[in-house]
Length: 391
Image (tube, rainbow, N blue to C red; front, side, top):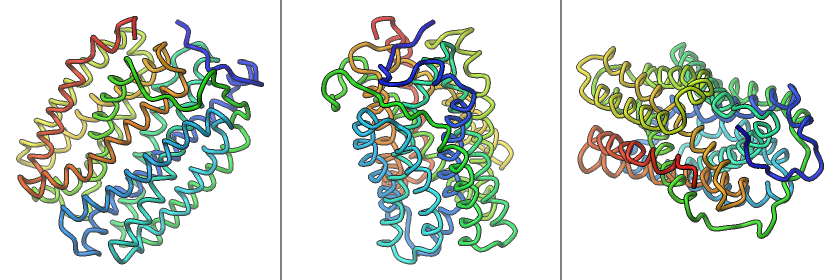
């Protein structure tokens, strides 16, 4: 099973398939997952520090999504012209430098600015590392995308676990973020010299509006990222609000979610090879929906944690499959399609946190999570369409 070429300008496929290049790609995904997960346990503390309600918090989280989408729109174009390496490096360094600001912002305005910058760094590295990953997978001629995304999940687990542990030990929020930032800087020091230096040369314009099958892939990406973003930003508040866990243990659910995502993605390439993309999307989305039902009807913390686990397992390989389908479609250049789907995915994060906050303000946070479960059903219904050979 081959993957469409990305037309590398100056590097042969054997260079892209070097072990060092795969390591750098994995580390880029690791840093991205680690960085965003470090923010998750800080959300309840930020809310308490600023004294805002769910609606205002949703607007603040909107800043992160706006920063991500703005950066992604630029990153797709810049990666096509200059390659993904400089953007991966800038994005990773940006995450490390901005994270401490999230722990000390004392007004809604300063937190909004910090979240915008944090989101821009995340959006830049996310698009660039996926374009880089598609090139590496193409050169290897074997499925690697789920494995790369597994490192994002591993980073999420490590980041959430480390931050939650430090906070539980009564370590100050600023000290916690400085420790995590130092770890990200160390990882980027290892990553940068091993990334591909080739330029992605695109035939035709550097910007193309998504069309054809890419539009549906982008919509499903938006839904899937919306669900993942809700687990990150609102999962802790959901279980804390239900009285199932204490504030300091609010990140436990996201830790379990991250573990489940990791387990699912580590075996994802083998699963897809065995049952195919269609069955992976179908059954994965159904399992995630079941997880929402368990989470939202949980009478005790242990049952709620099981819901986080099912959502993580079910959603684990949805995004990697969508990127794989982007590599197979023929209506747009592959790199631009990857950028479009990533941008649409983070449009889900742009709309998601604010949308969840507004729905929560009107009908409560559980009602917002029931809506997320319904949206996941669209992935189930679309599984056959997006995996047809014509896409």
